[in-house]
Length: 624
Ligand SMILES: [Zn+2]
Image (cartoon, rainbow, N blue to C red; front, side, top):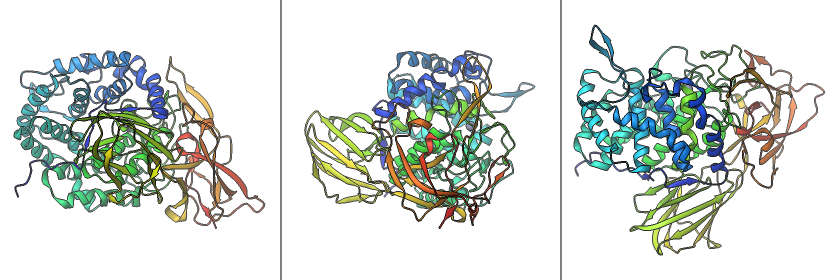
């Protein structure tokens, strides 16, 4: 059989706007719009009116496109005309910036005596991702010809100025847009370009197939840069669509396993306070890496159709993402720590600046300030996907509304009502233009041993399972109601040196330390804050004692990821120990043999969702 130019993905993304947020997730997007995402351009000159992507003299590299990559989907998901009006000038300037040869954007040619010496392509890749989203939601007819013209230009230009540095590490993000364009136009020359780009991109497949980075890294190198790695993990699957080499698909799995073994952290990410930095729970994880890893998981589940990637996606989205942004979205960190006992400017064992774990406008460096906005909106857009057999797949159970077509052009609306992941029940109500048969793929998370599905109150036997999805194929009727129950067990997850983290379903739990927020830099808005603890942190957990879960709120508050709003708590037993001390302004390594203070009583401790505690312990020494 002749090989397809581009292999099919297991699932297809629904166009932006097909999945709308609801419930607590809608609130999250509103909070984001009221905070940094909706107002950054008014308070941070790098994405203000002088930005190069608006025709100004200011930053002309990644910051404008990064900001748009989150602001645009947010604006359209909220159907917020005010925000949409803020997006449009960027799009107009970009579309009108295209030159005769097909190039676009602020000029990045570095000239030496009028001879062009260098060309950085990276910022273009981000803007192309922005434009694909814009086209999906507006159907603006200018976008596809614009992208085709650019691709023709790029094919010749890459011979003279091949991908290097950031662009070389991040070539898979360009491939996503080229593959997107090919799926819409069928132009064979795009596949030739895609091959050229693949060949010039860093060989992530081989790196993850035979992972050589076992320890904390110290040297400047694109291969160990945490954000590059978070982006690069999707590359072998993106390449696979072109090469159809099965080993490349496998290298994604091997890569994730290696990353978690040598650099894994309790919240589902791997560490990287610039470079991959080991499993110590006081090493940092950069916010850019969090949102990029989420985007990688969204693409991996789309391409490979494996629910495992959705498990990781949820873990990162529900824990690492909210934890590193202030509850009102007025400040963010550059680096978060799983065990984070103080957020202040102090030397820590990382290469990033001393202010990297404070909450502020631009701690350490402004990449996260501009790139953080894509996290929630792209998560929303990926909650449901289309399947190749004309059905629908639930990637995550967060609350939303889906409007799309199924089977042979039957209009379908799904209303997903739930407080998941804070609760176990999910209700999906179907509205159909006519009764029709199609498959529904319901994800069965790996942590969930006894998932239950009821349709119109009748319990279902799930017959087909595929890569973490239960497939229910039947004649669906308008008004059908699917109820999914995902029983969540409290688990002590073993970590390095027999330390433990505590999970229940997709949520990781942490001991909150109380928070005293101290304003250290005042601005008109978006101040910088240090946070100091109010309570002791050096507890070991008694892992033989059965933890209890307790719902602390009848309803999930507008911002559940805040210290006082935790919708659920876990009750555990712990003791203060004497041999766990501060090192380098952080909690030291959890001791292998914790020694309780002689008279320290066994205490009842309340753990809250990790994302709600800005100061916390989430990896504990274990007492048996
Ligand atoms: Zn960053």
